Amino acid sequence: MPELPEVETVRDGVARHVLGRTVHDVEVRRASAVRRHEAGPADLVARLRGRTLHAAVRRGKYLWVLLDDDASGEALVAHLGMSGQLLVRTGDDLPEHPHLRARFRLDGGALDFVDQRTFGHLGLDDLVPTPDGAPGGHGSGVAAVPRAVAHIARDLLDPHLDRPALVARLRSRRTEVKRALLDQTLVSGIGNIYADEALWRAGLHGARPTGALRPVDVRRLLDAAEEVMRAALAAGGTSFDALYVNVNGASGYFDRSLAVYGQAGRPCPRCGSTVVRDAFMNRSSFRCPRCQPRPRTAGLGRTGRGTA
DNA sequence: CCCGGATCCTGCTGGC
DNA sequence: TGCCAGCAGGATCCGG
Image 1 (cartoon, rainbow, N blue to C red):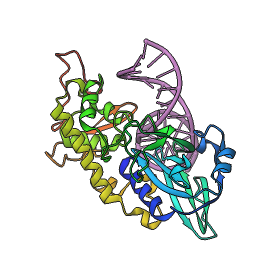
Image 2 (cartoon, chains in turn yellow, green, cyan; image 1 turned 45 degrees about the horizontal axis):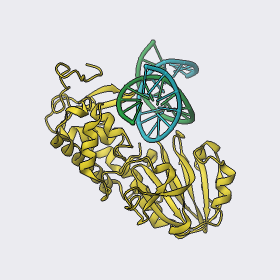
Image 3 (tube, rainbow, N blue to C red; image 1 turned 180 degrees about the vertical axis):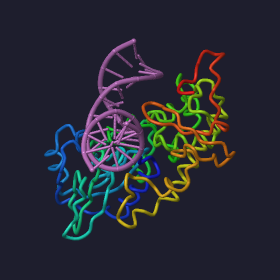
Image 4 (cartoon, rainbow, N blue to C red; image 1 turned 120 degrees about the vertical axis):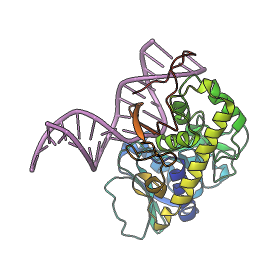
């Protein structure tokens, strides 16, 4: 469940603890952890040896480390999937996490990629210029992104995000609004948890058709998503100090401050109605039935779907 | 091109 | 007590 706030916490930790250090060796413990690196694990290891970790950058849920200097043109890309973690290890006798997938040996320690459910991955990728000439993500001034990230849209915390264009693009979709929020090629960084929280804050049902939303609704929704992610970042941003990112990437915010996600049967913090769970895309959606009423299905032919 | 559903993976939980 | 179905869910792939 690492979404934007959790990945940003990891990026910040990487930036503060391992930048400037040199990769002496790489141990790939599970080849599938580097499946996105097409030339294979051995190639990744060979090309990373001796490189210096130069900058930590994030866009949406993607994280990458620029190598050597801005001109090297390559980056180590990481996606944490559902359960990925990056753990900073110090010393000679390093602990072995049971789900250790790859270990980057640095001077005086290591950076460990740990991932229980194996949806995360690592790769070494070349950089391609950003179409708008703006920095590729948070943490670097380089106007480029790894090739594997080129199709990922800017996120709501990115100062170079074109919000009016996003509002128009979202409204031009012919889908349900929660689906649109989760589409990383439209706006990145939002996952199932913060999508539900943003929809609750905006008072919108996730099955509302995007094309029928007013611009003011979309702006309110995007503001809500930004606010909830900023709040989560502020609440969870300290965990890396212990050289350990929370289990499953969840921030402290996950436990304490969610209004509806995972709260089925509990009262809505706004109106006291009982939060309900709906099936959605083989997973779950949580909402307040009063603050987020199901859209009417009659009328314009676009229907909300799901359970009653 | 756009949309939506299936699929990948592992470990935990709950029902019988 | 043990087993197994169901669930968690990112991104991607494929069919329509």
